[in-house]
Length: 274
Image 1 (tube, helix red, strand yellow):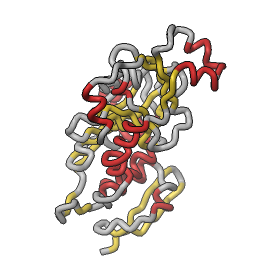
Image 2 (tube, rainbow, N blue to C red):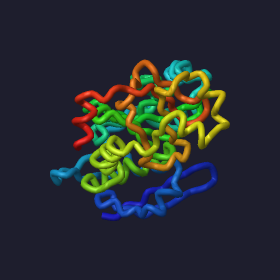
Image 3 (cartoon, rainbow, N blue to C red):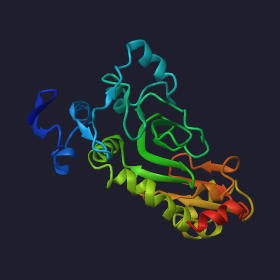
């Protein structure tokens, strides 16, 4: 059955023909949609899981005005990022899917502030891994990271909220072959094994001397620098190889992390073989 979905934003109306069962909205159309338009598609669509069972996402209601005020207090500047606020005025998030839950009000609940000092935990998989929206010190939304604990890596998953929603929609449509699964099933081990975005502090400083002032606070040569300034999806670093819980510091404005080198223990060597 064909269903016409209509999206309205200001004076512009976008009409898209879509099959709610087979989800034949082309990717070229998705990238032109706003966050609210994508959420409308997610809300209205029926998906089929890997067991052949149909399901729909179970959406939560929007935050009330009072709840929005309370949420704003948890943002770095006391104001909700405009993209996040727009979504929260429509829905808090949804359940019954992979990721296990998707929410937009879980501010600063990510357990590793050393890696992402300000954040919104957008999704969890029920296995201790999270999709985390990075916030700058002013509370502005940036990239979405996949934070995995086994192996312990941090990976750029999506460029922004919009692309994250597109990646989610694709994962619901194609649970067997999609960006979400590729990151979880393959990229995490590649990043752990090769850790291409990390270098010794001395090597990084030789190539980028203008970071001397920032790096001068880390005395000695027992430090490594993870450099994700390129920001492309699937780039990441193996924070579990380093003393990440106590001796990790992120650059105040850029995607650089300084980590104290850790001794190679049994767990590290075991994960290398994966």
